Length: 106
Image (cartoon, rainbow, N blue to C red; front, side):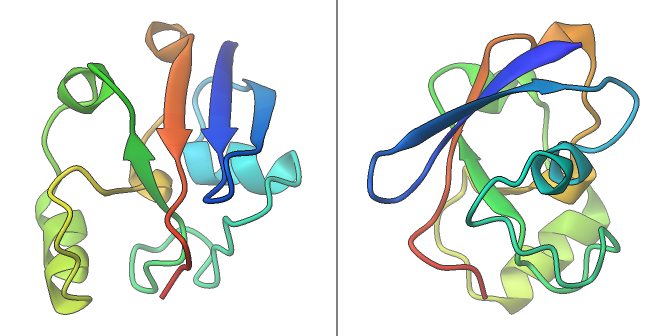
């Protein structure tokens, strides 16, 4: 289990106990995190589960995969730190992760 903090665009925060072995998106949906729409159910083709890892977390999560990079490019996402939460698998190594949500999901 890992504690993850989601910061909404308005600055409000929600901290969840995320279950390991499933995606950050699945954890967000299961815990009712506002702002994670996840319209495609985690199949990496809608872009409605975007998050922006804060601080050193961007480097610790590693680079975007090819599928993630392709989708984000097609959305004209100009923030190089943006990730799809459906492509981040939660583990104990992510304990303390802090992510910011964009103003809106496309």
